[in-house]
Image 1 (cartoon, one colour):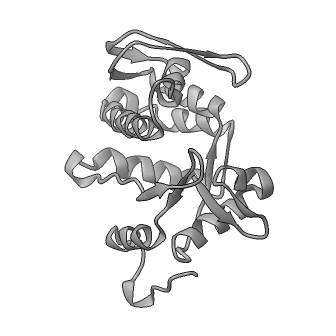
Image 2 (cartoon, helix red, strand yellow):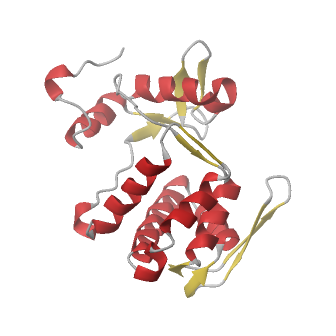
Length: 207
């Protein structure tokens, strides 16, 4: 996805972090979504993801199809059979990162599906008792502006939500140059308003 990165011109959205760290990434996303206020940042490394899933004891999910992909340069190795199975941290990371033969949209859907499976895993009382240890495992390789207690409270909140209380969305996009995508800003900011992230009376659109 191509976006305007403040003081750097156009670039892929993930390059904002590489160019200026969390501060520039927040500024970029905020500008993209009509000056949306972003209060906190959580940057989860691949290692943090793996260790958190391992601390959960793995996550059960149905793998939709045979997934095989090896990228030594990107340190991505995926070798999964189709069917319901419990994935460990490394396998789970491969599942959510896999894109070979798929589009970004398929990968996004798979990531959303995986997060729902994590929420189901947290409903297990034996797992929930280990929630502090799970968070601690993940935080060893995570950068965040949030306190440990805030993250634990969020996990408790997520655990109590029913499936019909969770809404997942993908920002509307259109084709850009080459294979790039461009966010449709007016539609995207309207979606953000509908989701209740700000008071519509105080809304101002960044041009």
